[in-house]
Image (cartoon, rainbow, N blue to C red; front, side):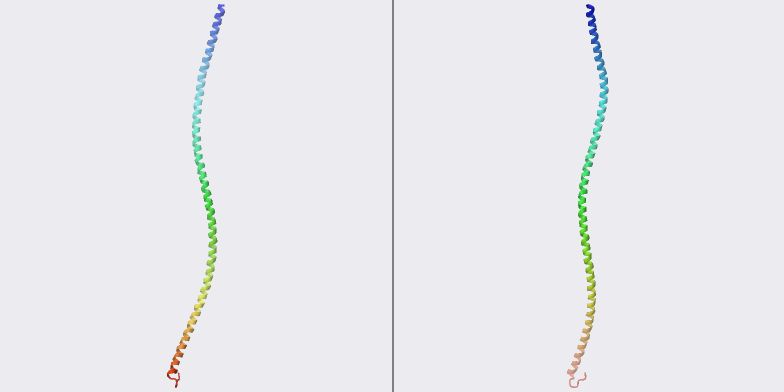
Length: 158
């Protein structure tokens, strides 16, 4: 029995040694394997941090671009409204210009007619002045003749 107990003790110790060896092997294997995994994890984490920073920068750029686009759209809308107002004003001014141009042409025609009338009236004035001068000369001649008759009435040959 001693042999059996000794054999059981040795077997038990052998099993414990094998178990400890397995635990040591698994621990060493895990240490190196997890070390490699930890290195890969650290590398991937570093890459993810870099990608996150790049994405943050890209997001900021896109936010700025979006803000600029919104401002540009607002400006374009304002300019579109102002453009429409200017087109309406231009159309009104063109209509006003055309009306004034027609009035100017009418006034030019009236002026031409009035100038002709003034010319005719000037000619009539000159003729009337000439006629007036002739009549005044005739009146003067008649006054002279009358004076002659008054002075020399009885023997008048004037």
